[in-house]
Length: 325
Ligand code: PMV
Image (tube, rainbow, N blue to C red; front, top):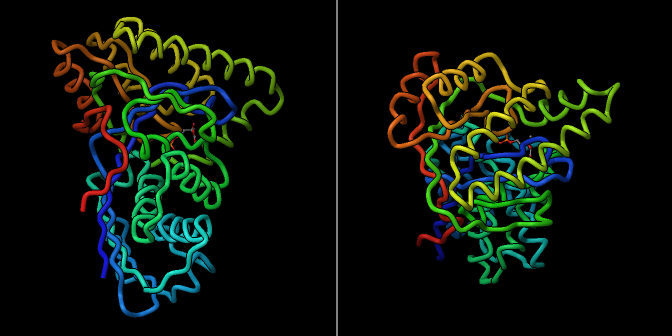
């Protein structure tokens, strides 16, 4: 009986959230905290799942019913991803499977655990079936899984899980460019508040429902800022990158997706001379990031903690999905 273990990284949005949903580019980095998934062939014709980190124990259904009917939240992404691989590669299973997932980070952080789990499931299943998939094919199958479940999303988190590193990304994988850079000196602060991505995308749209042209202009300006940030990142021009982060944050505030807690954490970081800071992801909670120098890293961490943020020890530019055993 075959057994395969795969891991994929979580992500942090660096620049361009929200605007990326409307065709503008974004910058995303993979982080060194990973989701791990083990897939094992079993004798019965069942699909079994244990995902203790999201409260799933001994979930079981007949293999032929995979992806059909109601699925608990913690099961959906893996189950639909497995079904998507099977239909993409047009193969049938000769055995049932038992999947176990574990995570190095909390699903509350907004590091993209669902997307990373979907990517792991696609790669593990392809390996089990002896099918070779390119990175783009893995991306396409996992992104379709996310769209089938969530309805909306650019797929940037899926790309980070597949390719790793730091990416310049356009919705749907229209452009996925790996940037050759080393670790980005970030402090990551968790707000303690859980955000819902689709709700926030819709809230930004709703806020500008009478002035859609203002929203479009803002997205275009964010897109331009992302291109500038990409250059600054490649040149390691951190002072400029910090200024661009603060500008990006102003747009996010105007979109109405920042919250007082995030604003306070960002202000705290800037008050002790971070190069710049912004929320990361959909907003409404999750995490903020601050770009720091070696000298002021500790001061920034302390300042964020002082206003109630939790510091997450995270390295950027981590490797993409990988078969471990
Ligand atoms: O909250 P997250 O990590 O799913 O990020 C949301 C970023 C958005 O641009 C708002 C959505 C997306 O899919 O790009």
